[in-house]
Length: 272
Image (cartoon, rainbow, N blue to C red; front, side, top):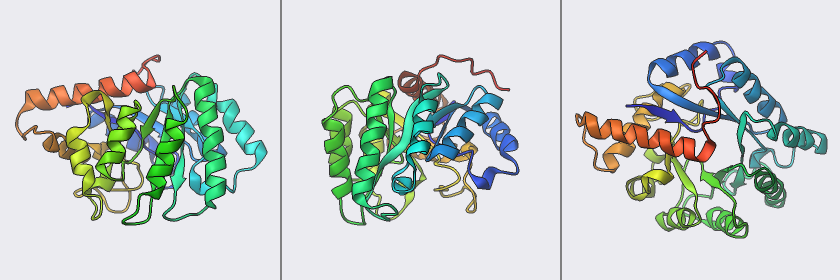
C-alpha cells in the first residue's frame, strides 16, 4: 500500500542527528509523500532547507498558535516571503489552541487571521491545528467560524480532534481531514467515526512526527515510516479488512490522490 505523511516535523531537534536516515526509512516503508510544515520563522526556513536536499518532500510555512505571541514582525515578514516559494505547498501550521494556551487567545486569533489571509492571497491551502480542553469544543467552533467567513479558503484539518459534526461541517466547507496517532487516545473516540465517514477525496493520514506515536510505534520519537499504523487503523474503520490487498492498494492510491489534489504534484518526486 502506498502511503503519505501529510504532516511531519522533520526539522525538529529530535531528528537533528539522523534526519536523512529517517527519510530513507520512510521511503523504504512505502511513504511516497511527506509534507514538512513550519511553526515559526526558523522552522519554516528549515523545512525549505530539507526540501532542497530531498526534492520529493514538500514544505509549508506559517506560525503555530503556540508561537503567536512570540513571533516578531520581522519574523512574520520572513515567513510571508518564504510562502511565495513554489516548493511551499501550504500555509501553516496555524490555528487555535484553547487547551494549553501557550499564547493568549487574542494573539492566537490575530496570528490565525494573517496566516489565513496569506493562504488566500497565494491560493495555497492552510494547515489548521485545533485543540479545546477535554470535553469542550470552543476552539473547534471558533475555527469553523473563521473558515466559514472566508469563502474560497482551502484547508486541511491537521491531526483531527473534535466531535463528528465539526468534521462534517468542515467537509461541507471543502476541508480535508487528516488523521494522526491522536485518534488512538482516550477522549478522541469520535475520530474513529470521522475516519469511517469522511469521503475518500477529503481524507489524509499523518504522523505529526516526532509527536503522537501510535500504538506499536516507538514511544520516544515518532517517525514518518510509522504512518502505516494509522493508515491501517483508518482502513479498518472504513471496512477494509487485513489481507484484502486489492482494497488496501486502492485505499493507498486514494490517499496519494487526495494529497496531490490538495497540495499539487508540480515537482519531481524522484527520491534523492
